[in-house]
Amino acid sequence: MEGMRLALLLCLAGQVLPRPINEPHILDDSIFSTDRTVFEIIQAANKEIHGFMKESDIAINLNRNARKCNACKWPKNANGIVTVPYTIDPQYSASEVNMINEALKEFEAMTCVQFVNRISEADYLSIQPGTGCWSYIGRILGKQTVSLASPSCMVYGVIQHEAMHNIGFFHEHTRMDRDDYIDILWQNMDQDNWDNFEINDGSTFNLPYDYTSVMHYHQFAFSKLPTLRTIVPKNLSNVSIGQRLGMSNLDVMKINANYGCSKLSLPDVFSEI
Image (cartoon, rainbow, N blue to C red; front, side):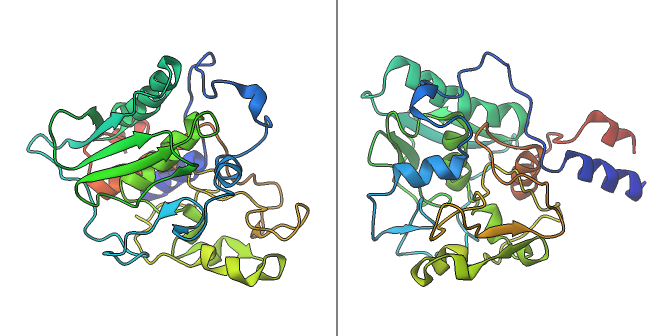
């Protein structure tokens, strides 16, 4: 039984969720290279931001340990639903508003986390077309800014990446067991970028490492030169790192594990094992 469960987990590891082929993941694909990952897009959008960002897109909350998020979950109601209220700035176009809503709606379909339009809630996300793509980790109380610049951050995977930060997740490459799965080539980056690779001591939820998580850096992140890799998978020469489509199967499993969701995040066959 456990062997079958593990086999299914490994089979699902790194698979990106299937989405409608006509879904507008990028509003104007001409402004992006077609093979750029979420983090490459974020890095490009945030290149002029300095001083208050961690790992390129995490805003620092001075009242919280930057590497832990033990008390930043959004609350769950009596029905087992985690609601995250949000507002969208009116400066966005109708098509941009639709993309943001669609990207956030996907969480509700597969997890117990629901991003809902704010009515009068005191704690909520304020999605704004600011400078770059960035957000805080988890719930920080009160009005909480999420920057999704237009058009540079109007990518389905980028929106979901920042949303996962908002519900408490750090980047995949900083998980506590990452050294079992990837090598960080420190010599290929400037020393002032080393802190972007600090390990987060949060839970792995006993799930496999996810090379294609929407939260994973690309292999040349913070490199001195475009041809020098900074992240290399161990013993897996053909594995791809990062993507831009949106949450992977394992991303969904992590959300459900973190919030104790009762929704299945695995195939129905699991219920028969």
